[in-house]
Every structure is written in C-alpha cells, then in structure tokens.
Image (cartoon, rainbow, N blue to C red):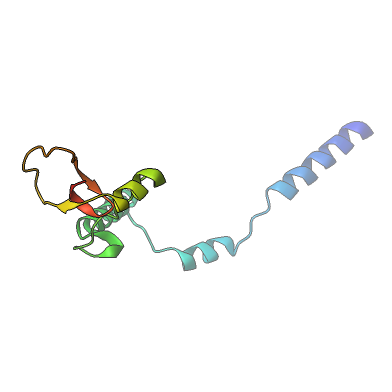
Length: 109
C-alpha cells in the first residue's frame, strides 16, 4: 500500500507541475493582439492588403523597376567592355550583336 500511495503522490505532483496555469497569460495575449472575431475574415483582409501592396509596387513605390542583375561576373564584365547600342525593341538581327537585357540596359551587345 505504501508503494501505491507513493506512486499516486508522485503522479499528482507531476501533473500539478505540468498543468500550472498563469492567469495573466490571457491578459498579456490580449494586450499584444487585435481582437479577431472571425479568423477567416481576418485572413482574407490580410491577404487583400498584401495583394494591394504588391499591385502598388510594394515598398519601392509604383514606378520602381526590378534591379538588373547579371548572375555571372564574367558575363557582366564582358558586357561592360563591349560595344552597346540601346534599343527598346528588337529591330532584327545585326551581325556580331545579340539583343538582350544586360548590365547597360535593353539593346544590342
């Protein structure tokens, strides 16, 4: 019987140590979070605001351009040293040139 009582006493102490409730935890959570009545509506509103931000151009503004980045340093070095003729559109093949978006912009390299 003593062993059984000891087992129950240890069991109660373990349960008590893992089931402690901090009563101020709900108060702390309520201070830091907005009151959300409908979680689905809150998620849709968040998604809508993210889509609006993306359509507006994000943090960079509406007229921002994507940065031109050439992945290979050797290619970028060659583009900087070669002759460049800017052109917004492809106007046909030119001997010795290729049309692409490079370090200097869109045109014939």
